[in-house]
Image (cartoon, rainbow, N blue to C red):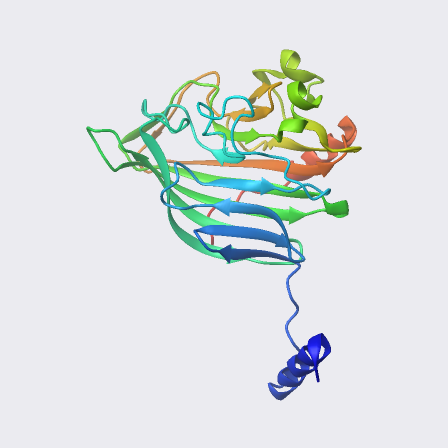
Length: 315
């Protein structure tokens, strides 16, 4: 017996000797990688990778691969990589937590991975459950934990190579009082691939309220914002960032620019304060799709997402 056929026969013989059939292989898997990374794979092909090294300023997801096989996101601003080094593809952070910036790479706040609570594989999707600490690294209180975050990062497969990235967050105040300050920066950011941007690639921004491009979408409340554009010759793809109706500020304002980025704002209009032990639960979805879907189709996908329930902690 040689080659693949021999391996298959040996595997089946071993299963018979154990007294049962071989277990089915999950279609979607979260596969641990070196250097504190987790690869989300659909039938062995990577669609996303979660980075959680303790030396990072924050965990993030890169790449985010569309149906054509290319990442629809990038690391950093295409024309200002230094001051926008914090634009880490898809990330979670906030400009002001008790006055501490967790947004930029030069702030005193850092979101540090603590542990991997669980890994789930399945035919419809995969997920990882992680715990992060939001830490004030300022001179006066170095290492002070302000927030304990439990996060579920999920991949759910759809038809035609499309899929959904779902972020479930539980933010628990560890300090006596935690205030998310009034700002358009945070909580979820998405830096699109250069060619998808309106300015660089001729892409298009749309929101659930009928707005088109930055002039009509910037700082406007909406259920969702879609950013679509060319990812290759004759290939258009995009990402729809969705705000879940269970979020306390739904429909949230979106910070969206023609230069290729979009974000869902948690405290655009007013600050939000948590007392020690209080938990803020949030759910956001990113639909990774081919083409530039019609508004009715985007709305249909949002309604399906809206009918789901957030679950950040592993039970």
